[in-house]
Length: 391
Length: 188
Image (tube, rainbow over all chains, first blue to last red; front, side, top):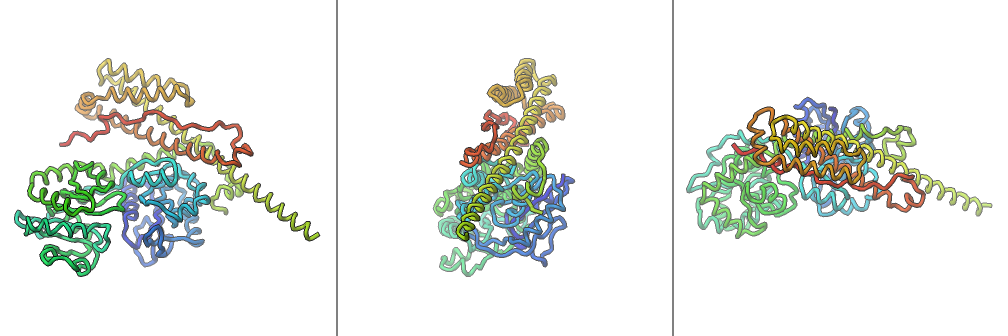
């Protein structure tokens, strides 16, 4: 099958959508499909062979955060050329309402189109403002996928209609085979817990964890808190009690391999995120690595953890509850063991082999619908009316 | 004279814009109807495949006689229901969903899995068929939602841009996966 995938965010910077696109493309190529990915990227960035650059991305403030996007007539022309050259059986757009190459491809394309919605944005003013022009293009999407129930709700409230929920994929094996590293492995007197993510971003929840630590350290004075991710430690520790700062160990940004080893080694992985997560891929990675997961009970996390059956939950933004649940876990190795086993079983559902099969079923359904439909004449006038590439 | 020309071009402009808008909307509606006919055909094909998979399992000799009769009966009803989507088809598909759920009880599923490759193959086909029915129905109903929204526009109603095509209705029947197939294979 010839598959064209469009990623709206620049491949220069890491991000959830980019990783999803990369992994999906690599898995499908491994299955023998022909895949081409169109994404913005700087000319200096080395790209995998299957990625076609749509040109340099510009940093734009959109929907509350700064994103690196690609737009304008030059990008539109590139998108058209890519579509013409690709002759795709199916076109898979990611985030089709983000003002970048996905939108341009949606406007230009007219084959079977599948779109995946990743965000669970509460609302988007710019989207509503531009909606009338946009509406008829959105009608071209024959199969809509949402990566989570939250993302699906965004689709039903802002766009109308429905979407099938197909979760993000993880290469479970890469994490399952991670080795234990002695310096990160806990001992009965010095247990280890891990936090992963940008420490400076409050919604990642490091402040919640920090607020819970005094109560935990009072019971388990030897606790080591391993903090991995970009950020300035001095900024974070400002104003914290000295004994809490002493328990923190900053690892800085870690590689994918180190991340897997860290998750496999620690006694408990803590995800205190306070919101804004539509999915929680990190939890699945942690479960794949065999970590005992403790996460805030925000909707996305609670669903990934199967309502607390595959990992422990605490009440969001309540350091007291976090401390209590964490202490209970640290004192109960048997429970940690059983949660870790349940987590591994749960993670298998999110392996790319399972997820990509579901996506393939969507492709096939959409292509079948297209083949069954009567074909329409492709005159220049018709294309103009349909908002397709004019010439 | 100049006054007349101004009016002339103003009216001409309005007419051109109105004509373009009507033509654009008609083309948009046409594209939606094309999509709709495709999704309907896809759903039909998927339903036929589901019924065939169920019928094959019923005739495979892997099930007990009574279960075979229930499942086979529902599958044949689905295959023989008239092609168009009326209430009869929805009822037949509902019945097949129910028959699959009843037939594939916990014991039957475990029993089929215990038979190795043959049983697994039948179950895998049914899981895949049910999953694809869900996709096809959802995508078809999405297309219907889009069509219905465009057809409520005043221009579409006033100028009868939809012609005599009847307003489509979403297709509603239970397409849940049999309960014991969706559960994870027994651990270990």
